[in-house]
Image (cartoon, rainbow, N blue to C red; front, side, top):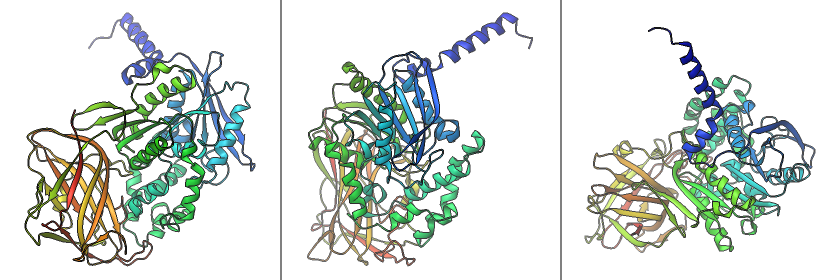
Length: 574
C-alpha cells in the first residue's frame, strides 16, 4: 500500500479531533441522554471534617460557566477518580455527566475507604457522615439550594440513611439498592453467602490493588471468583472470611452474630432509615435479576402506603452485569430527568405514568399506573408425572422424593446472585441432578404474559425439622434451552408452615417478582429443590449456620387429590 496523501492525514486528524471533542454528545445521543451544555471544572481532594473529627475525602465537579446550580451528592466505598481504579473512574464518569448538564456534584469516599479516615463498618456512621457532608455543602459559597442524592447499591443505602433527616434533600434516585438491610443479607431467613463473601472479597482486592496500574486494578474482576471459590465450601462459615481474604473481617462476623429474625441490631437500622418519613420525591431503579429487587419493591409499596408518589423503573439487568452494571446507564438517564424535574422545575421532563417495566420475552417496555398491575390469578398444578397442568391431580398418594445433601449442595445458577455470572442462563445442567425435581407445562399455543409476584404452594415433608425448599420458574424455548426467570426459598423451622393432619406441611414460597411473556411454542418449567448455594447458604440441617455438621435430608413433595401443590401466576391481558 502506498502512503496516504498529506491532505488525507489532515482530514483523518480533523475527524479524530472532532470525534474527541464531540464524544460525550455522541454518547448522549446513543444512550438517549439529554445533551450536555457545559464544560466541567473540578476541585479535587477536598477534606471534610465530621462531627467526631474524622476527615473524609471528596471531589467537586461543577459547570465552568458561573451560575446557580443544584447539587447532587454521591457517597461511595469504592473509590473516586483514578485513585479508585476501575470503580473510581466509573464514578467520576457519571459525576462529569451530571456536571456538564448543570449540576454541582460532590463525590465522597465513605468512612474508612480509600482517602477517607476512620474505620469502615457497613451502614454504621453513614447517617452522621452523610448529614455532616450535607451541612458542609450548605456552607459553600457556590451552594444554590436543592440537593439530590444518586447512586446504586451501597451508594443507595447511604441515601436511605439520610433521606428522612434533612429537609433540603429535594429528590433521590436509589438504584439497585434497598432501605432494608436484614432482608438483603438474610433473604428468606437464610444467609446470602454469595453476596457476603464476594462483597468482603471485593473490598480486600480493592485495597490490595489500590496503588497498582489501572490494568492491574481491573484484574480484581476475574480474581473475585477464584478468591471466593474455596470459601463457599468451607465450614464453619464463621471462618470463611479468612479463606477468601486471608484474615477476619469484623462486619462479616458481626452479621453472623445477628442471624435471628428481627434482631435488635437490624431493628435499629430500620428505625434510623424511617422510610415513611421520607418526603422527597423518590425514583427507584431496579432490575428483575438484581438481589435488591424484593427490597426495592417493598420500599415502593411502603412509600405509597405513607401517601408518597414514588416512581419505579425495572429493567432486565442484574447487579454485576458487565455491559450495564446495576442498570447505571438507565439509572443516569432516569436520574437526570428526575433531578431536572424536581431540582430545576422542568416538570415536562418527568414521564406521565409512575411505573415503567421491561417485559422479558416480549422485549418491550411498558408504562403502567401501578405495580403490580391488575392481573388474573392462574394456577399450574404439579403432577406426579412431572407435568404442570391447569387441572389438579385427581389420583391419591402421588408424590416425588429426593435426598438433599448439604455436603454436595444444589448450586445456584445465575438469577439474582451478586456475581458476574448472574442473570438469565440456560439452566439445563442443573436438571441432571438427583436433588432437583422438574415440572413442565404443555407447549403454549397462545402467548402468556405474567407481571407481578410469583408464588409456589407446596405440600412437603422432610426427615429433618430444619430444612429448606427452593423453587425456580423458567421458560423452555423451542430450541430446548431453559432460561431462569425468578426463584425463591422457604426455610422450615419448628412451628413454621401450616401443619396438615397427615403430617405434611403446606408452605408458600415467594419466587419474587418478574415480568415475562411466554411465547407460542414455549413452555413453563418449574424446578423444585432444597437449595441454591451460595446465593442461599446451604441449610446444615442442624438449626445452626455456625456449626460444621452437615445432615442430609430426605424430602417429599405431595401433589395428589388431597395436596394441590401449585405454581400461582399473575396473568395479564392487554
